[in-house]
Image 1 (tube, one colour):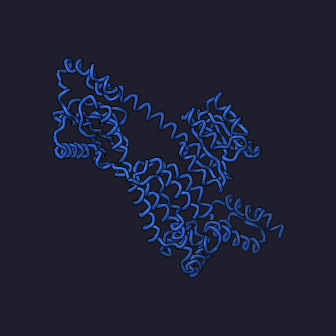
Image 2 (cartoon, rainbow, N blue to C red):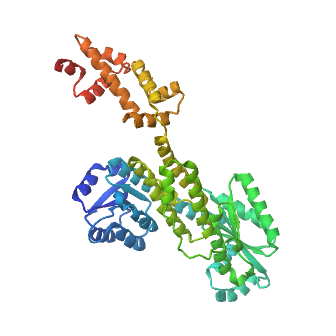
Amino acid sequence: MYRVLLVDDERIILEGISRIINWNELGTNLIGTARNGLEAYDFITREEPDIVICDIQMPGMNGLELVELVSKEKPFIKFIILSGFNDFNYAKQAMEYGVKHYLLKPCNEKNIADALLKLIADLNRDAKREQFLMETKSRLDQVQPLVKKQLLKEFISSKPESNRGGIQFYEKLLRMNFQEEFIRLVIFRIEGEFHYEHMFVIENLGEDLFSQSILSTSIGDNVLFLINEQGFNQLQMKIEQLRDHFNDIYGMDMTVALSEVDCITQVRRLYLEALECLNHRFYLGEGSIISKSDIHQDQRTNDYEYDGQSLCLFIKSGNLEKVESEITSFFHDLTKSRFPINLVRSYVMQVFLVIIQQSDSSKIQHYMEKMSKLIDMDTIQQMEEFFLFTAKEITQVHYDRHKSNHSDIIQKIMGLVEENLANTELSLKWVAHKVYMNADYLGKLFKQETGQKFSSYVTQMRVNKAIEQIHLMEEVKVFEIAEMIGYGDNPQYFSQVFKKLTGYSPSEYKKAN
């Protein structure tokens, strides 16, 4: 079980959350509570919980200060932040320390349980991923020529001057002449979930295709080749050939990064250069072939500003075309800037927080829960698509509100309900089919016009009809009434609904009236 610490300076909230959550059922154990950040930090130092549920505003040391301190000393501890509506500006800071889960106060049992389950799923997935990588590396070492692989790793991890002495030894051992070769380092990164055999296949395909390949190995999720310089265009053609072949077999894409050309003693520098290229898949997209010429930094410093106010105006006016244009322009500027990726994520999250505040208050928590998905996206193109979808969804709500009154269709729906109260199939979907409309849209329209949900309206109409029948009966027959108003052969459920709305059972209602 994962061990949980709960931190809040409000005793009522602290005790309330402690009692309402079924910790064991969620696979957790509440091992303690704290009233402020200082008390929580002492507890974390002693007990090292897996998860900390923490308020932002606390005396002594606030939640963000606690997250910052713990993230440096014990980065494996995960946080769920409790925040008020006015605390949205803190979300950007918390995101920088790896916090992905936020709950808007006041939060209920379901919100807390859902956040815990998502965090536990992340922890389980990280554990499985770590185990998978360990098993992959173990099996990879067993089936591939160990000496060459370890040699490349040693070259990468060592300084150039320390490589010179060992090179001669390995030249004799492997009957190779490293000194005379000018080489590139090429990194292949498989996109999406993959297994050991996928990396193994890439190595084998590469060793066959790059006939002058010197060394190859894998480090983490990457497959590396040290290749003799053979002309960039020819090399790119072979890389595309390998990617196409791999895609034909597995239906999976990969991103490729290439270093510049240098001698064997500079392998570490070439490796870092190729990693920098690979990192720019965030801008250039998954499946790219990236070289140093593709990653020139923009000359501007980190002075980019975009407050999102014009975007908010377009959203509130329901102008979908302007919203799409504004977001496209925003992401175009970020892509062109080539700022550090963490800074770009920060800009995106900042504007995302601004636009979700234009949604209904009941929807804000829903969008807050999506923030972790946005933070985890690998490319700026993915972030733009998700961002645009959310903005258009909120804009559509405002657009619908600006449309002309829909009273005629609502009156027609009310008439259908009144005529079909005895129909057990009566539902929003059934009515939507009758009027040839989308059920979700119709439900929103109905609530907008009447102030209540369609299901609540049907229930109220059925109870009203039941009351009429009770007045006509000398002796209340619950079974007959249930059939007459669409509850079929479930009179017990009808009685429960009736009592919930009127405060009486059908028989009690007859006596009282």
